[in-house]
Amino acid sequence: MAARKTYRELANELLKRYPSGVAPGGVSVDDIVQLKLQNTFDTHLDIARAMAKVMRADMAAYDKDTSKFTQSLGCWSGFHAQQMIKSVKRMRGTTKGAYVYLSGWMVAGLRNTWGHLPDQSMHEKTAVADLIEEIYVSLRQADEVALNDLFEALREAREKGDNIAEAAAIKAIDTFETHVVPIIADIDAGFGNEHATYLLAKELIKAGACCIQIENQVSDAKQCGHQDGKVTVPREDFIEKLRACRLAFEELGVEEGVIVARTDSLGAGLTQKVPVSTSPDDHAASYIKWLKTEEITDKIPLRDGELVLVRDGKFARPVRMPNGLFAFKDNTGRGRVIEDCIASLNDGGADLLWIETDTPNVDEIASMVAEIRKAAPKAKLAYNNSPSFNWTLNLRKQVREQWIKEDRIKASDYPGDIALMSAQFDDTELGREADDRLKRFQADIAARAGVFHNLITLPTFHLTAKSVDELSRGYFGEDRMKAYVVSVQREEIRRGISAVKHQHEVGSDLGDTFKTMVSGERALKAGGHANTMNQFVAG
Image (cartoon, rainbow, N blue to C red; front, top):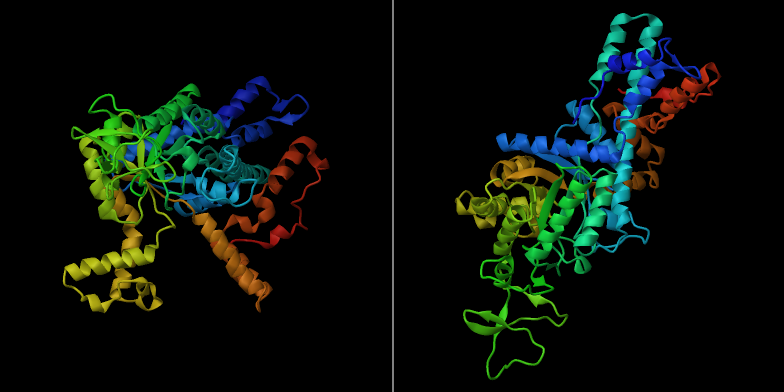
């Protein structure tokens, strides 16, 4: 990402044009400098280009040191994304390593005009690009608000004649780090054929996406990755969609754009079509070999219109469901996943893989990645730390099973079913060990399974539901205003969450600054002594 011009560089450029320090109409050079610096990116396509470079640099850093994995939370509004990144920056002092994940599930469930819908690509495809646009508007506004505060500090220092404070303000302006971070955008299965995928990918990129995640399900039969009934497409079809995304990046000048190829084959037992195999070692042949077939006999002869395959030199009938779909052999998901991933990397030009799993198991993912890396040594993953997993139960079961094998405990010491979820096990040795594994899960999977990016798809969906429920129970119950103050406002103040000053958070002070720029002393400002936001200071 190209370095921004410094305060002094911009001021000097403008002073060459306007030596008096005032532009036509009486506009101050300093005000122009401020607005230029607040405009951290000219277009959202510029964001895509810059964030692609950020992702590539992060991937290179991860290749050298697996502890440098990246993370994101799925956000379904610009405000969610803004508050997440502001929190990261406040805590770490930098946004490095933090991305935004844009979940197709949450777009379908919360962002379409037809109400809540399941994750089946029934929502308007434009809603995905619209959300990317909204997120970047919110992140850029966070830049504007923060830089306006720094320029306010600069003005105050100059009014007081404090040269040290003035130099400190200018340094803070020059070293300001943007809130804009990479977005990994879910394009589902492409919303149609390869040309439809290409057209939609361009819209996502123009909205700012530097990374597109696409899955190998059938567009018109798409299911959520953690539901049944998933139908995959032949590898040639998926490779063509990967190429469509690459062409979209190249056309728009985002040469370092990142493509995440997701495979749902681990939980998908069906395919919609049988590809034509032209040679024994092509993608069609490797895909067809996993199909479940029936022997053709005199008692079960061929009928007109049936499809026939040659298997081991004999004719065989692929098993076809009543809905016309073809079934894969049982327990072949792992093998298909490995082949999918190798094909996506080596022939589809994908940059990252996404293996959708049914449980969070480091050993399972690591073993598949080890197989993939035999043919694609640089394979890296984005992994869905999904809320669809019962994390507590899964990790406790894993600990229990391991300890039984190691003779550390007896099977009767802990239940092996849902009862293991009970709070009575929270403070047991097993409960604490499971929580320790939860805490280091992302680091473990990054080190052992090639996971460059750890994400949670739907956290803000669940957090919003939980938080609103918590507030509602108290506010509409016995606590009334105490519920709001104790659970929300008091915590905002004590944590230093800037949103407690809600007027400032959405740009009220920005408006005052601009009014002053154009109206001077005539400006009718909102931020005077009577503004109730003055009651809030971080504790």
